[in-house]
Length: 260
Ligand code: MLT
Image 1: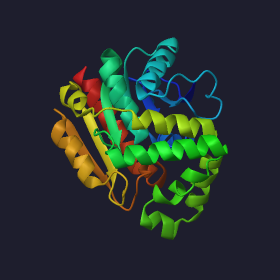
Image 2: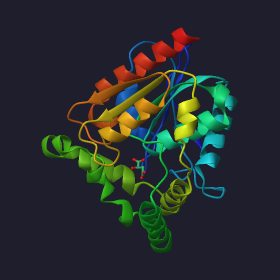
Image 3: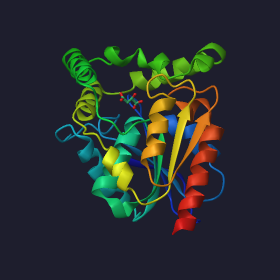
Image 4: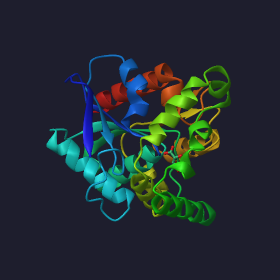
């Protein structure tokens, strides 16, 4: 696993970005560049991404969370504002459960706290087998357009190519690992309910994978949550509307610094 430093800095808690599936830290590049201020901004490449397929543990998001915690501690990060998009949000909730002292503030971007339905779980396991047995990312290629909102697909079709390129870079064995890990995750609504720090929920208003209703559920669940609905963005809001997402994350980081 690799920790990418977008920006070093000691002005407030570091902001740690966890990517979605089937992607890697690059989906955060535009947002990271747009985060105002001078605080540190870091991103983690989760297990299964390019260069992170050696010695993969049994597939689980708990394993991902533990590896993130170890990576952060090795870099001297004891406490952080953690932002996760979609799968990254699932990992962020696992991190809050297993390493609560590490997570001072939580941004849940285009994600949910619920587990999969039986149907979704079976579908993931089918995709995992197809990717691994065929040594191909073909089964997840359709996600390149599914993760983008209809406005982005119509107005900036080049972003579909960008996302397709990132998907093509993913190791099939890593795609299979992540699908199996997500299929095994429990409902973590209780973790969010118990989380004591500030929460920022962010969702693209054209997100069809984790729609606005899922975000509203997160806001209703958390003790201290604010909702930012990003206009004309889909599931990959951090790529489609980086300025809006960066502002929401900076806002959360400020609230977290103030909360102590
Ligand atoms: C993601 O963007 O990380 C995926 O849509 C998550 C999922 O498949 O549940």
